[in-house]
Every structure is written in C-alpha cells, then in structure tokens.
Length: 364
Image (cartoon, rainbow, N blue to C red; front, side, top):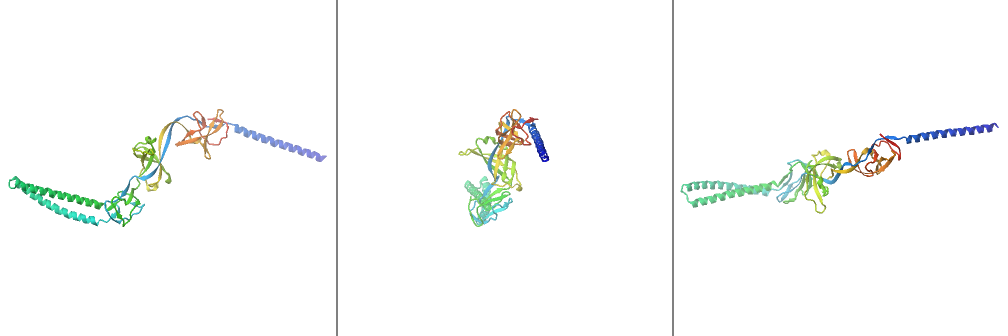
C-alpha cells in the first residue's frame, strides 16, 4: 500500500515538472516572438530620377610619345652597334657607326678642289676689277670687259658648286654616325655589327623615356564626347596604375571607313621608373558623360549574396521586402540602379544588420 502511494506521488511530481518546463518554454517562445515583432528603427530614402553620369570606357595600348626608326642615307658596313633591345641610352650616345672611308676621301678631294677654285675666283675677281676700271677710262675694249665678266661669273659658279658638294658630303657623313636624340630605350634591333646598311632601312627603333601616351579607338557614336585638352581617367591594371589623369592631345578627324572608329591619343603625365608602366601595355581610358533620368542609391544600401545584388525596400505596412536589382556605374559613394527599383519606392539606405522578409521597421 505504501509503495502504491509513493508511485502515485512520483507520477504527480513528474506531471508537475513537465507542466512547469512547458510553461517556461512557452513563456520564452512568446517573449522571443514579441521581440521579433517589435519594429526596428531604420534610415530610409525614396528612389527618384535625377541627373546621373555614365562612365564610358575604351580599351587601348600604351605607346611612347616619341618613337623613331633610325636609318641611314648611305650604303656601308656597320662597324659599331653595341646596344641591345631594352638598353637604356642617354641623349648623345653613339648607337651606330657605318664605314665612312670613301666619304672622307670624297670630302678631302672636294675640299682641295674648293681651295683651288676659291684661289682662281680671287685672281679672276682682281682682273675683273682692273679691266672694269680701265674700261671706265676708255683704256679697255668692251670685248675685254665682257670676257673677264664671263670668267668671273664662271669662277663664282664653280666655287658655289663645290661648296654645295662639300655640304652634301658632310651631310652624308653625319648619317654614318647615329646618336641618341633623347634619353630612351632601344626597343627593336634589326641589324648587327658587320651587316651591310642600306639607305632608308631602319637599323634600330628608339623610344623616348618617361613620355608615354595611350592610343584608343572610339566609335562614331561617342567621338563627340572627346575634345582636345580634355581630362580623362587612365588605368593600367597590370601594374596597379589607376585613376590617373590623362590629357586628350590628338583626335583623328578621319575615321576608319570600315569600322567607323576614330583614333584618339591621350598623353600621360611624366612617369617615374617606379610606376612600372611600359610601352605596349593594355590600358583603359574612362570619360564621364552626363545622363538624365537615372536612379542612384548609396552603396551602403546594397547587399550581396553570391553573384546577386539587392536592397531592402518597404511595403505599405512598413515591412521589409528584399528586392534584387541590376547595378550600373559607381560614382563616388553612389551606384546606379539600372533595373529592379522604381521612382517613389522606399528603401533602407543604411544596412548595418540582417533583416528577414516581412520584418516590421520604423522610419527614423
């Protein structure tokens, strides 16, 4: 009998304990639900059309502002060419020497002939002045004056001819020694020491140091955006060279008839060697143009989930609604919304915590 009473008492205590735990659990769940239903204060903004900006981007290549093909006017064997591709050379350094023995011999010969001709001219000039004076005194005939005048003109012509020939030989001699016209790099070498140089054939290609530009092509629909001396933004992503100001220095007034593209040159500021920017690198030029009827929102309103971007909007009951949107260009702290958000809609401008769909909020 005693055991039965104890058993009933134990069951009663168990039931009371379960009721107590269930009551506590229900109380905790109710409190949590109440907390979730409590509106959260948020900062909102209303989407509206406004004046926006479009970032127009064009791909191009970095090039030296001055690139020259160094060649010669003379035919001769190359006796000196001790630079290699990639070598840095200071202005005035000898790059190429070509055998010039024949030209030097011609120069000596012309100089000797010129000395002789000048002496003859001086002697003829003396005779001319003497006979001219005698003719004025009626002591020389007209024929004698005419003869000496002819000799005098011929002597002057001979001197002028030899002076021109000497200048030509000296000019040819200058092309037997090619020096660096400015500080720069050897970017191409087509001949070696001992090869035969020919007139007009490039021996090396030389590019100026530090002075670089970007060549881009612009479609006919966008060419009106560019004006000489405009400032644009240049990125060379390979070396982390970004948002650098470039100046539009040339716009080709004739476009390609097939592609309807126009060539535009953008000059870069003088660069240090530490910049890492080199001729031949890929570059991107960006120019901003105004555009009407654009919706922009602060970047603080955007949320990202994987490859998707969105923001939180509010319905008429002040409940959170997640809206996926497609974004456009970034301008400072603002980002353009291309689709997914219309004018007049409210959205949470500062997302500093996660929200759940349908969560109640209050607008601060």
